Length: 243
Image (tube, rainbow, N blue to C red; front, side, top):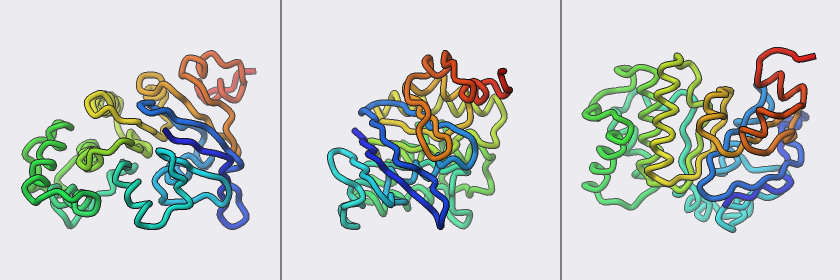
């Protein structure tokens, strides 16, 4: 369970998030949508403490995130993985070592168990036998799948996706969506995805949060979003102004 209560966040004099509140139940698949620059990725980074609010509370599993010590925060991070927009892989490290970094920092597994976990997570994203390759050897879609493999390797409760289909063609986008559904189903994860892709909103999420001007202007199901009479929401969904 995640509870966001009256959080605000500013950078310099610009207010990015303005007194927003919502809940995410365990097992939900939540899409955070809105125009570029409205604070979607900023909000996402609050869930794992990469950013902390100026005001308000973030409660995860009944712990207030912004009141935890660093060591307590690390315990929360062991339950929460993030898939970054472009994979965020280290070019100088093999695929094996890119995943091993997460396991070294966030688990107490033995060396043998870590090797097994790397193999299992790559198999889960349909990338067998690539442990010794490097990021430059992979396509953009494969890099994103390795990012997911690294995220699930620690066996989290929550997985955060930051624009997982950016830069992908429609076929690869569909494959990525199927992979996200597979991971959610097999791992029973609570999933939170920042996206502009309405296909993900409609086919992956069961809760949609829409931001505009630092505030939540919609919080409901994809069906409720699509049936909204709000002109701005219709403009966003359809990509054209409806007078």
